[in-house]
Each structure stands twice: as C-alpha cells, then as structure tokens.
Image (tube, rainbow, N blue to C red; front, side):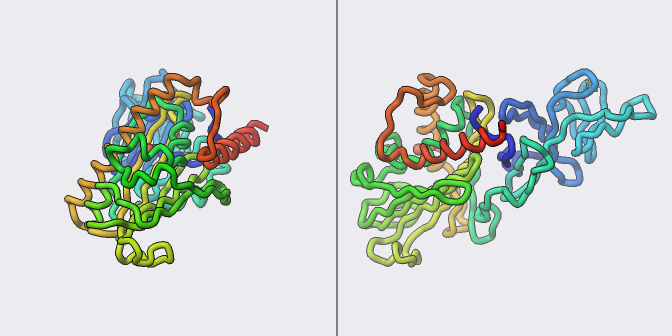
Length: 340
Ligand code: FES
Ligand SMILES: [Fe+2]
C-alpha cells in the first residue's frame, strides 16, 4: 500500500451515516462507523474484543454501539462501558478507536498515530459546507488502486477520449497543454481554453449559446484529495482576468480513500455557485458527474486488471503525466518517511 497512515481519509459523506452502523475497510483495516444519539461520529475497529464479532452487525444504542452478538456496549472512544448481566467491566476492555472528525459534510478518519491527528490538517473544502454553494455529493466503489484514480484526476488529456460522450466539448481540448506546479502538500495542474465550444453539460448548466472561455485547475492535496476549480464564461467577457460574472463556477471535488491495494472508495461531487435552490440543476449536475465518473470507473477497473496494485513498472510516460508523477513521488516520500 503506497499511502501514509498518518493522514485524514474520508470515511463517508455525513448524510450517509444515520442510525445504522456501517462497515468500511480503509487502508486494509476494517472499521465500523456509527453516529450516537448525541450526533457524534465514531470510528472503531470492526471487531468486538469479546469474541471478535463484527461490530458493524450490531446496533446504535443511545450514544453507544452495541455488539450484535452478546450485547457489550462501546463508546466512541472504543471503551467497553457495559456488559449485560455483569456489574464490572474489566480494565482494558476496549477496541481500537480511530480519531474521527466531521468536516465539510464528510466524516474523516485518521489511520495513523492518534497523537499526531491534528484536525487542522484536513484539506480545506469550504464549498461543501457553505450557503454560497450547492453540492451534489455522490459515491462509487472502485475495484482500483486509489493511486490510479488520483493519476486520472490529475490528467486532463483523457477527457477528450474517455469522456467524449459527457464532458468533452471542443476537439482542440485534446491538444491544449496543461501547466503543473508543486505546492505545499500537493500538486496543481491546470489550463485555460479560450473561445472554445462548451461541452453539452456546461452549455446547459450555464445557458451558453456560443463559445466560452473555459478553465480547469486541479489541486491534489496529500494524501488523497483532489479538488478542481472548473467553469466556463461567455468568451471575451474577462474570465481569465478574474471576471466570472458571465459564467458558471464549479468545485469538482474528489475524496479518494484506499480500501485495499486493489480497491478504493470514491466520494465525489460538484459544488456550484449558481441556481442554488434549483432542484433540476442539482439533478443535471448530479447525473452529469456520475455518468462521467462511471466512464472513469469502467476504464480504471480494466486498467487495474492489467496492472499489479497500480505499479507503473515497465510503462512509458508522456509529457502530460507530469502532475501525477509528482504526486506519486510526494506520496512515496511520505510513506518512506513514515517507515523510517
Ligand atoms: S462478540 Fe461482541 S459481545 Fe460477544
Ligand atoms: Fe475522467
């Protein structure tokens, strides 16, 4: 596994965590997620300390999680706090608790040393939790090493080919170069396309009848979050200089969580700053994102089939791979530092 354990990983969208415990494997470890009556989210090892039953087969009972086998109860810190028919709880009766924090309408878990879990290090994604933006979160499970998905998200060259039926617009997109830059904790890659034909989804969402100035700027932040500032404005109205008043802006957000070496959890969504309360627009963008990323899922799963755990050994690189190669290098450095 080429991901650091000391990092915040998205476990689930907040709205998906209701009154039932949910099993989630992250970085090869089996977790159970639950939300107590007090609203607090908990993440525990999915293995009861009594007879190893999966706690995800149990129930939420008040603020606690009750094992479905013999009824032992655990709090969000993993401590066993009740044993049916027995007054005393033996010292040390507990399961591992993972630091869990709810932010940006998602639950984030820290998979490494709890002493290092600083919630301030969760990537800033304010558009997922703001009155000025409307987000349409979604989820897919991929039989793909998470690294291949991150590669894909830092690569705009595939859009013209893989997404010809969804988000590709102008044929000139295929040859428009991108610029890659290294930033603190991540990599940024992007480009402008001036006076281009908009893709049908953008034309519909923005009501464009003619050409647009279109932008795509992706940022990867360690370990596995990618967010993209994407949008389009009527051509010649000053978007490249900062005036987006004649256009639409979307934060295309991708929260990738490694499950095993050959699978990952993919939380994604578009957040927009226009037509905020328009249910039809939400449906259009929800479907648009999902249909697009289902195209990635199909290709990535086929690619994974040809690769051992996402390794690129023996493959050749092209110029457009710069951003993904930098991200891979930074992750490898983090994993190495952690091993030392
Ligand atoms: S296995 Fe959980 S209470 Fe017995
Ligand atoms: Fe894609």
